[in-house]
Amino acid sequence: MTLQDFRLETRAWLEENCPPGARGPGEVYNGSTKIRIQDPDTRLWVERMVEKGWTVPNWPKEYGGGGLSTAEYVVLMEEMRRIRARPALSGFGTSMIGPTLLEFGTQDQKLRHLPRIAGAQVEWCQGYSEPGAGSDLASLQTQAVLEGDSYIINGSKIWTSGAHNADWMFILVRTDRQAPKHEGISFLLLPMDQPGVTVKPIRLLSGDSPFNQTFFDNAVAAREDLVGELNRGWTVGKRLLQHERSGMESLVAGGANERDVALTDVAKSLLGETDGRIADPVQRDQVTSYQMDMASLRLTQRRVVEESQDGATPGPATSIFKVVSTDLQKVHSDLLTRLHGSRGFGVDEGQFTAAEIAMTKQFFFSRAASIYSGSNEIQRNIIAKRVLGLPD
Image (cartoon, rainbow, N blue to C red; front, side, top):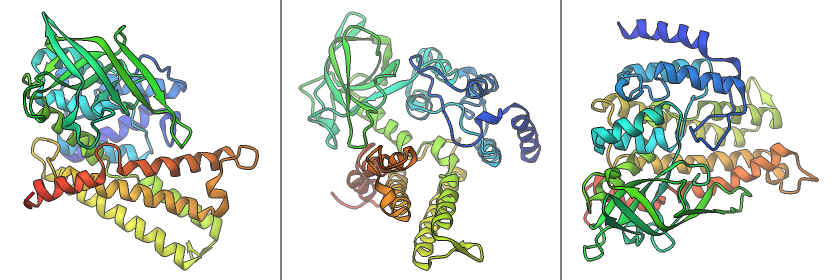
């Protein structure tokens, strides 16, 4: 089948199978058994995409994926954007631990975990940062001791996004206290629903609590769920971060086109328009500059996808995308709130609408974008050392 034939077939399938309620902004499922899908169209969309294998289009079919080539994957994303179809499934499973298991997992681990991710039957969370090990992650102290066929885990993790709704966690633990700090670390998988795991939410300035502190008191991970070699988990953990920062899922998606259009529409509605353009020349220049930077990022992402070998996520260069995309996320929030003037910073429910308060929360949350998933300062160090080859 030619790529054009695949495009026509995909377009026809999407038109027939993507429900109206799964188009445009709305609910996107992450697979958690603890979350009930609210929208019937969202549920139908998940079911149809699971059956098609397109929740993870470029994964092998034997693990529940669609078996698409990178070129076909790009076409699918383009056709989904054309009808404004939302992703059927998105979470730590599809974007982080799934690609990592494809690369480092045993065949047994792949067969046990990947089909459940692809089938929207499980959600994962990340156990990396600790109260005393954030940017300096290699200083982590959460310990795992092998006892028979199980690792017994004690310690705590912080900023564990979505832990309250997660079914499983992938976690970095110290398995050799005598080794240098970048060694003696192992990568484990463990179920969250067990007596030894306690999750406590962290309330943020934005008013939301997506993050948690997670405590381990003799928590248990199966010996067969050690990913990679014992005491060599740092390599696995770093590779997962590259998938997180700019995995194929985000590279192929290529940016937030709808968000750019919405910004222009908001500016026109608030400031007026002249000949189809934003009337205020200063604001028009700022919005246009942002959109040009976003277009440059998307084109670079597209080039990286086309140059990738067998659809593999790039290496240290992903840090470039992390820095640029998070900086642009903050620029977008700054522009949006500035366009609304004093209505852009609403916190009092009696004086501001729900949409205005949500915009304020998003502004606050955007400040964190350049900190989580590895701060932009850390990313620039990686770029300097691993991409540009500069000395320490």
